[in-house]
Length: 438
Image 1: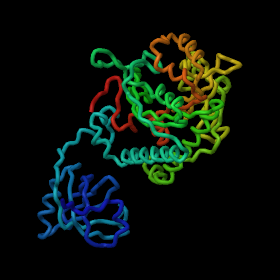
Image 2: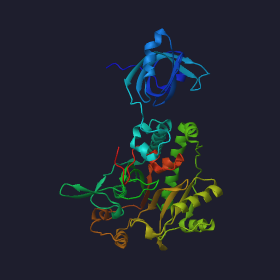
Image 3: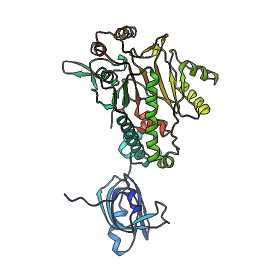
Image 4: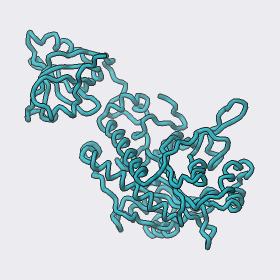
């Protein structure tokens, strides 16, 4: 099969003047009496096309006059470097233009359309350069994380997303028909990444979908999300998990800054900073005192931190340490899952943490309880039936090393890295309580 030679727009500047073929969609058209200008965009960037109007170019001129924004075209022409051209200092003088598919002239969304309207037409919204950058950043970030994991002897696993019982709270489960019975969509790979520890895998990671039947409409929640998980054996406390976690974050942000830092600054106005190691660590009780001293009382009936409290402690850390991250540690056992290990000298506290990035929690991590008798009692305390957890509890009956890990929301990391106010902006196709399309 013969494929038309095509040059990506980003590669044009490095070429000498001469014939080129480019393919993409029409971004804008300026149809003037003596000359026509078309801005053509592909997945790598935009370039100006020029067509001087005369008898020889009248056929191309007629085609350009009828072009609607979004039409996909193939063009050939002469590449010319000209520093007067504002768009990259290059342009292509047309010799041919073929319309591959025409677009409807009236587009359903505009630059000032709201997020819900844009999500209705997400494939058009994704044509914006900043949206293209979001997913190139996501690609670089995930690749950097995987590289760090592999270089540090982690094994990648893919856990099932259909489960027989809850891995955390039954209240947030999606129930589905499963032949003659019921199954549940996995809230996290928690049980299965822990299973790798008695299996002797040592260190594992997974990047995969997770589901939460949480009827929340906040800017940072989704019913389906990509969970980033890691679990490691032979730890002494949650501190070992935090050290692993912060190194991973630095590796990811370093890669993103090196590859996309200039574009992020241009399109999002964000100067990405590589965080210093170690990240600040503040016990939750102390964090609440600090927040109270700043004039804010956490508005919760339980022992957790609330979103405004997270913003306040993040502001404090930025002021005191110049850091975008903070580990909040030693959460109360009353608000943590049954499998979090409790402090030996204070069972009211757990060996756990939340990682806050730019004022928002992105992850929960902990040392896990690996003593089966303790696990059973803690499950009962949480109102769970040990009989339903039989397959999970069996993991701990045949020998398991002390272990721990974390689960982290990929989209929250992207949202906060790019200083976006809504998770929906950085999810390819968002799913929430009232959205299952497109």
